[in-house]
Image (cartoon, rainbow, N blue to C red; front, side, top):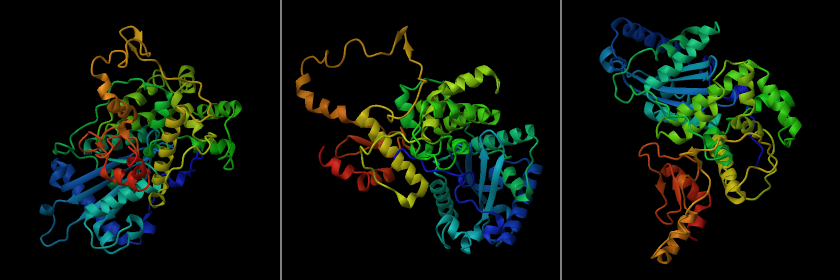
Length: 466
């Protein structure tokens, strides 16, 4: 471990296809024309989105080190506005955007193309399925190929993401290319009357993480596997440097190279903002979002390129950890962790998280070769620092404490504050984590991750010892 998989810029969108790759250009062109027609009606009639699309679903991914992320959506045309006897028209759309720049790619994939088998290589399943099944499979395929996590998102949030991207493009004098790209973007120019889809993300107040170690584990969650600056450092050091151990010289050269360019300066706070918003989706991990916003604060007090902005980034712990991700940490082989080849790059992210989580549990520190000069600000409560002082539970146990020693010892081992597989602090649906009913020592964000940990993560053997 300690060696990150390297992702070239072309792979940041996962399995993306062009029109020529899809072998169904006539189908796509006719569907684009039909959708554009209904969008024109929507603009004229100024009615809610649901009048034209009876159902719609949206998922947003985390971003990679280039700031690229994906928005994947399903739109089902309202049958009331199609000709009698016409087949259901539905499309899956994708938009790959950069958090600080432009739209990179778009796709529109019609139901007919899935049903005739043209897109089986893309989504992994053949004809005869529902569009919801194709959508779920497409999201999973892009997740596994790109190594980014996805979460369900309300339409209002997706609309804001697209609109913000268009405003950046306008400022930088960039344009949308082609009818397909313009049509996909226009799908996010309507208003929804659905209660869920009207929701907007409200970010929490910034707050410091408990310590650098906590931030390190957070930045190694599976959805953050490619949240690093490896592409930049490959440009600097070359593609043969993946086993290189960091030195002070490499550390200084890395920071200097990243911060000498205003485009990269602009990217870093935008990445933190996107990730904070992402953690507020579907499960709302406010604590994690607040840590990222805390680290972002000093970067946005002054304009990009300002000496104080550059200095704030130079001394930012998140950037320093992202740089260290590129180098070999010399962790040794303290633990063996399972592999998940069927999940491709996202599976590599799970393996990576399990390794560093166990490494931290065993050593209580960052990988020994890492160089981190920045720190997280201390939390101050009522004028006193949050240090370990005052009475402890052992000192005030009182009568009856001895009878609970077994429970107390068990609680010392409990790791129920986050998912044992991905590190999530809440379940997407219910909020509360699922706890292993047998040992009550580990928790999970979903049944799928509980099965992974039981079958491949070693918990089956560990649970029997509890």
